[in-house]
Length: 129
Image (tube, rainbow, N blue to C red):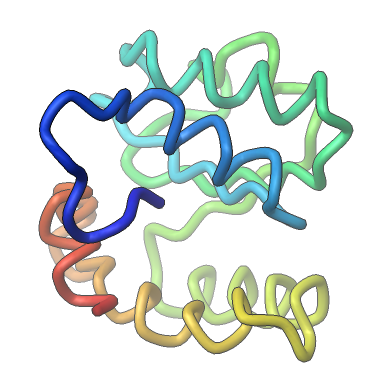
């Protein structure tokens, strides 16, 4: 989301806010750690308030544990290769022809389905570059 080199003193929260405002689709990858993150829930709420398409994917989490703000959206399990491919097909349809469409393929390879865990966001951003 944020630019590669934030200047000292820059508000990284503003970078995140701007990215949310400019996005067409918000992909929420819900893992045991992310559902406990106040920032992830804050971003989900911001996307909801902005009327963004919210597309949740769950990995290693029961649908019963999905936070209330997200539970009204259809979630996809990406614990299996088949689930991940179905999810990516749906995202490609939503993002067809956009910059997000091109970034989607790079980001998708950052999910380690075999181990059923998400790669830390820091590593995800490095891989997508």
